[in-house]
Structures are given as C-alpha cells and as structure tokens.
Figure 1 (spheres, rainbow, N blue to C red):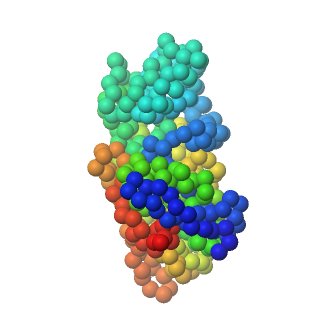
Figure 2 (cartoon, rainbow, N blue to C red):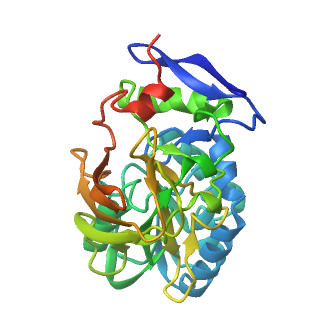
Figure 3 (cartoon, helix red, strand yellow):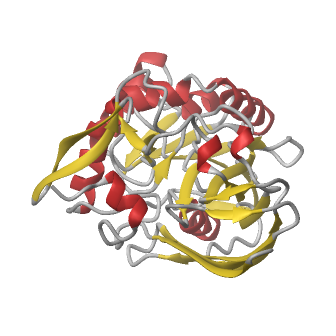
Length: 367
C-alpha cells in the first residue's frame, strides 16, 4: 500500500491511531479535516485564505462598490482585519470588526493601528450574536462560509445580524450560497489505495479533537478531487440568501442521474458562493479555491452504477445544540439496474460517534 502508513495523534482522553499519507505519495486518496467549523486557525490557514485570488478579487470588488460613505459590520475579521481595512480604504464611514478568537482580535487591533485606521475601525472581541452596535450597519461583510455552505454557522449568525445589527435593506457580502452535491467514484479520485490524512493535517486533527473534547468522525475533505471522479451532474441544496429570508434549517429533495458507468462510493459536497448578486458563483467543485470538497462516504466497497441510474436524495440541515453550527443528514436511494439500494449519511458538528462506519474504521484503525 504505497504511501500509506499508520501513526498516532493525541486526543483529550487517549492517543488515537490514524491512517496517514506520505508527502508526494501517489497511491492513497489524500484527506484533510474540515477546519473552518472549529477554532483552530493559525498563520498557515490565514495565509491559505489570503492567497485565494478568486475569493479576494470578488470580495474586494463588492466592498469597493458598497462600502464608500457607509457603516460596515465585518463578522469574523481575522488577525489581519483584511475586509475591515478594505472597507475603510474604500471610504467606509466606520467599520465594526468582530472577532471571536482573543489572540486574533488582539492582532487585528494591531493591524488596524499599523494601517492608520484606528479612528474608523473598532475591533470587537466576541461572537457577533452577543455584541451590540451603537447603530445598525449599512453593509455586512463576512467570511464565515464553510466547505459546506453553512457549516461555519453562516445561516444562524447572519440571520441574527439581519435581525439586530444591519439596517433593513442593508447589503450583505457575500450575497448568497448553496451547498453542492455530486455522486463520486473514489477509484477515479486518485490512483488506488486506501484514503489517508496528509501528514501536515495531523496537528490540525489533534486541534479539532481538542476543541470538541474527544475524538470523533471529522468531516474529511479531498483537496485534489479530480473531475473525472464525478459520476453525475451537480445538484444544489442548503440555499442561504443572506440578505433575504434566511432560513438555515430545512430539507431539500433532489435527484441525480448517473452519467457514466462506474462505482458509487459516496458524494462530494462543495459550495457555490455568490459574493454579489450579479457575480458568477465561486464553485469549489470546479475551481481551486480555499473551500475544499467534503467527502460523504456511503459504501466502502462501492456500488456498481450505469449511465441512466438515478439517485433520489433528501438533504436535511438542522442547527446543533450550540445554536450556531448545523448538523447535516442525507437520506435516499439508488435506483440501479440491479435493484434499489437505500443510502444514508450523517455529519454533525460535535455529536458524531467515532469509527461509526467502515470508512472511518479505515481512517482510525483499532490497534
């Protein structure tokens, strides 16, 4: 099994065996944990986001159109206060920049002071759902979109912002998002071998376990997902209209049609993001950006499918008991030549079990 090996990572109550991948190994599917849902940001992750030209160009253009002369709320400003500073430079009258991580908030204040905007940017430490503003903002900027559109809590957070912090008719940047879903053949995602975590991802896996308080079945992303692994067209679920009637909870029924012969192992889930209403969407399933496709495993061995087979799915989003982050569930069936097969996938923010199916028992083997 070229390139794949077993190592250990630390969890709050034990050490956990994990399947990993050597740098540059060509065999196993390379995985990284989905990180934006958890407080694990560091300089490397911030740099990764700051180097996303597709995202940055869209945000910069939208802020340049809407910020001049207006008050701006920046939710999740980060240690560099990037969009707060962009709004101030574009001519915003005042910017309230909210950051929940204390160290990032401290660094954001320093960044604002260095840039000479301390008189026009106020950095507030805490959750946006707990802060108050002296006046409602005209524009709300946020970068809390997840690898699945609402995974970082954008639905609940921006619903609260629309009710309390942004004036009626105010502008939201980004404008809206959806989560995308496509049937996936893992055999074509990478050339053979069992999936494993990238070595550089292992410290982040430890941080995620620590933030939740135990090891659990993390959402696994495939950064280098090849289009040839797609078995169907792409459907949209979890619609989030940030400036409109925002309803983060709900269920959508969709049908996917298999477009070629192959083996169905699961789904790839991505995000489409319209930063402005008139923009073309950023699409993480077709573009290289800082959002990564999430793998939703269905069958370890895979299910044979043929062109014309159909997948009926119901994608359900509920808000977890922290009041912010969503839990996801997918139920459906494959209607294939060989018969009908039920399908199910569940991914919660912090209540998942550990080694709950064959995919995760392979990633976290028992010693």
